[in-house]
Length: 97
Image (tube, rainbow, N blue to C red; front, side, top):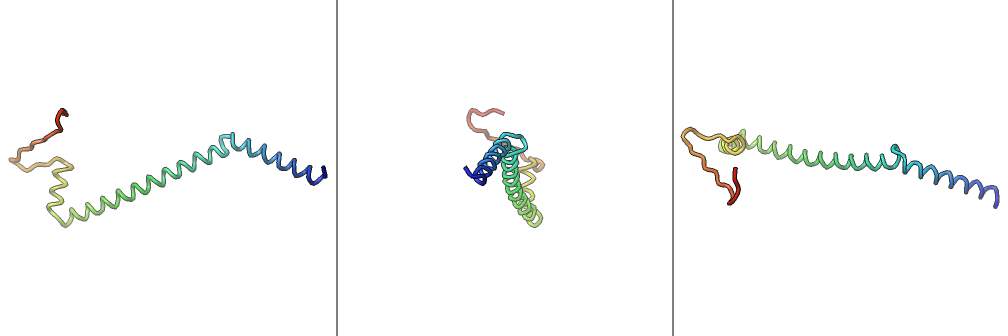
């Protein structure tokens, strides 16, 4: 074996050892994979929250110009009723509150 081939084998062997150590160290590939998964999860959460913000902005715009939308929101989300109204609630069969 020539001197150049021997150095290539040593170099590749050292590279394989370093790669193996990196794969099993907490700060190596496992950390990179965990951080990548976290980044993906955060990006998905951000997209979901952007959609929610857009929905809430549309709802807020609808309430400022439409009194019936404002009343509907007060009734559905806050449970408001007008004086003298009687509220009836139906639940599915077998469900108890």
